[in-house]
Image (cartoon, rainbow, N blue to C red; front, side, top):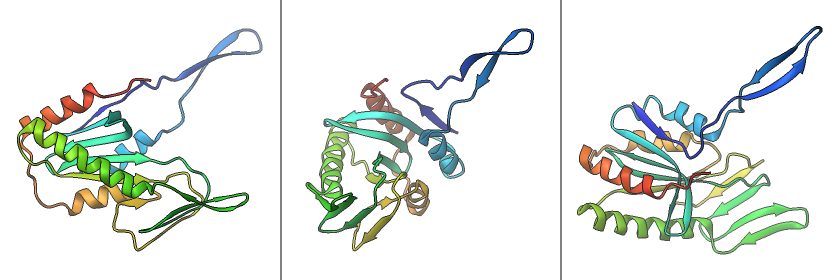
Length: 191
């Protein structure tokens, strides 16, 4: 079963409405979040010994989701840009009202550097090499064009499930998974 540690509980909203003769309380369910969407996608792949921790801050970088399981650690960063995005191995551009704007530093290069730092930190923490994979997801973008990019970048969370499914080796034991999950839960930012 996939264990999920959320940063803030989502509670249904209660609103009072006036009826014909009395006031009644109406319960409105909260909108579906990215957490629920990701859990729904990963439910079949990440069944046993998997933990998902929401809003983890490592090396001054906030990751929206950290998945820890036998196949390694998977860092998911969500970019909430609504404009069109063009990514290549050399540059990242966002569409604005004045044209295309180049983003410096490149988000993928920045994410790769942080991934290497976290890989080294987890190796010192656990005493063994830990496979760490990072993802950059643009769920709200109107158009995402990716070319010549050797990174996990997509507009939906399906790529996370695809990469986890293709990973064959299960290098981490249960005590190591729990140690990494505890390390990440200590760095969870509660909202």
